[in-house]
Amino acid sequence: MRIAKVVGNVVSTIKDETYCGYKLMIIEYRDESGRPSGARQIAFDGGQAGIGDVVLVSADGGAANMLLDKEIIADLTICGVLDSCTYDGETSVFS
Image (cartoon, rainbow, N blue to C red; front, side):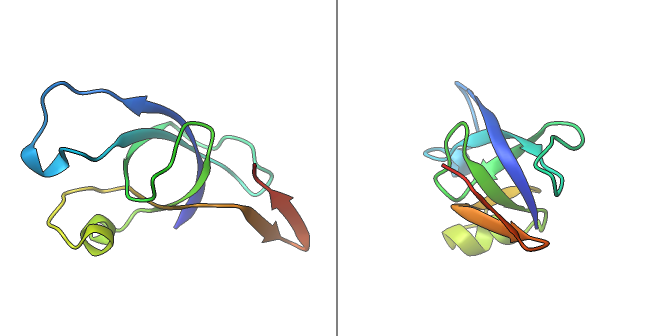
């Protein structure tokens, strides 16, 4: 699992039936200092995240299936929205 920030969403007029009612979000991974790290990715939203939220992302393909108790194909899944994080003795609060 990695920490990321939601920077956008994906809009689709036509998609597979299993994805109806669920969001795809554009995420940007963050390093331990909170700076962007790597290329932006698209993640399935299992945590009801919104643009600007700091989230926990799982790269396990089965995470979406476990969160929704449904067969969903997703490489990256937002598992939750973070309120705060402590790293190396310093706490960051996300609002």
